[in-house]
Image 1 (cartoon, rainbow, N blue to C red):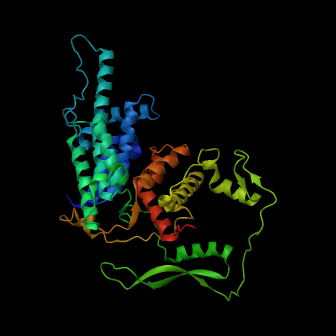
Image 2 (image 1 turned 180 degrees about the horizontal axis):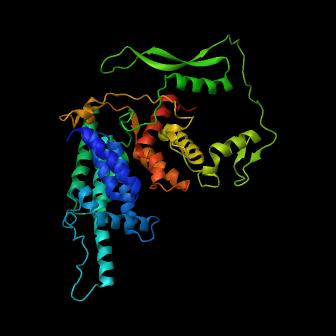
Image 3 (image 1 turned 180 degrees about the vertical axis):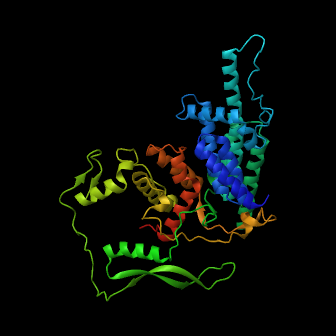
Length: 449
């Protein structure tokens, strides 16, 4: 099937998720679309959300237990899970080697046995959840491995094998991960000794993924249009009245296909002579003699009343009184740069929540340069190019911890239902990747040493 068909299917499944946001089947279906489109990072994110929902289905004390059960019931009544699982649950109600997922048959002669019917329904739900959980582990491990996050992929193989000891596919993926790492190590050092190698700690866990403007992203503005330049210069005048934003062509320092020699960017230019030492808005150079605390969380202190007012209207209500102090703190040195980008993501989420705005439409993020590459969409319409997206250059650093796990943790800290339609629209995996691309294209995250 041409990639364009998977693009349409991805859109259909996304709309269904807005209608039934607690259905893991839909996440797994969309993960398959992402696999065919060459986005293993997005597939891994959807598979992880599906795994969380299957855990909720099997945990009666889970926060979303009732919502997941309701989604299962709606899907079974509509026959959707058979069509979307593509083999995990077949039309006969069986789940890939597990017990039948269908409930007990109604005894028409003796009447309906309500208790048996409830037990049968619960049994069916558990069997469906088991099938989805296995599928989630498989997709998580395979797609994280494709991203280069071998340690996280290996970990999910281990966890999945513990839950499903007979699942040979997980063992196959685990062996493939070890073989890939072995080949890489031997290429670097032919004398590499595997005897002291521990995959739980020594496997690499940061890979890279495609850094591009997703075909379904409708939030990216034309950064060089008259409207955009007018908006940017109106904001700039408040801080630097002698400067202006203008387009400029710069030499292209990296190769491209087709080859180009220049790239258009936005530059900052002086519109009037600026003498040395001229500071348009000199900030106070001494600590404020009076601090201003948030009335609801006195531990949060601001330098001035205008600063407090600005925080209250822009981002602070989303994090007021929340346990967010640990986000990005006490990070090991190798992860320090990633932690800084996570803090930027955290602030963007707080801004979006407080202002009830999509994070890509925020004034602070909308016009940032994302360093996107490979804008050509020709492969989407080629029937013979299904595997081509997998060979596209990857320029965006990616890890399960910082791109999937930590953002969900941040949202939960802010009491956001990560599965709700509003949250999915604002904080879907592709949105987070786009924000990271914009932050990395603008902020170097170089650390003081």
